[in-house]
Length: 111
Image (tube, rainbow, N blue to C red; front, side):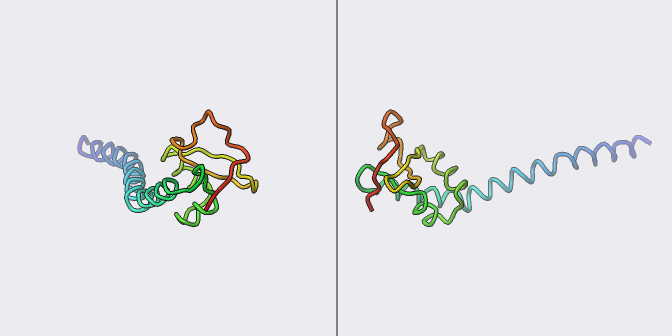
């Protein structure tokens, strides 16, 4: 009876932990395979941006091959901030170049 009970308890514990471990491994693989190279591309683009350092979200999405939300998440991870370009599009710049004390409205993107 104790062997059967041990097997049941072990199965329940393994069954509840396995999905959690699978999620962690999936996120880790995604970060290593996709997020790191994308962050590198985005950082290089923002570092080399002309003028005040603003780049439209559209350009950054195309460069990194991401959706709006995924691109924004990566940009926040790079310590970038959003703003509104003169063309009324969404733009992003590194906080180092555009501190939060600066207005992020009606800024110019120079390519």
